[in-house]
Length: 144
Image (cartoon, rainbow, N blue to C red):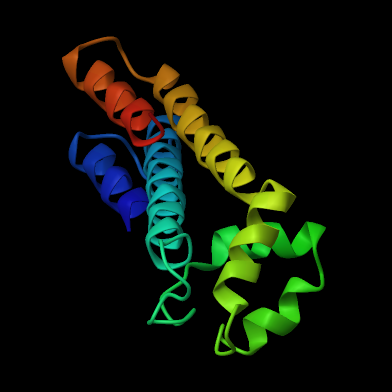
């Protein structure tokens, strides 16, 4: 969505569809959107799974997939707990412990940072100015 919005902005600014500027604008938006969504998923995971107390009452229904997918790459045994939707006593604590053990939270932030950096890199095609600097600052603030 953000990628297409940025592409449309380039087209409205007079750049031809398929031009380098239009492609770069789309790349800015796609990577900005990915960085935002990944960080949003991590925050949601922290609020859903890494909550104080014995169990998160909402289970895994609202837990984002990015953190869990990255954890699953390192800890295949996590799949059985996820498939139960964290329904058994102790499941949420086990999920939290395994996610922390695998470094999935750090990997999630690293992935978001890579997308934010790619968005900033795509901005290099555009002339310097307040708008460009503002977009670069927005990209960096998402992962700050």
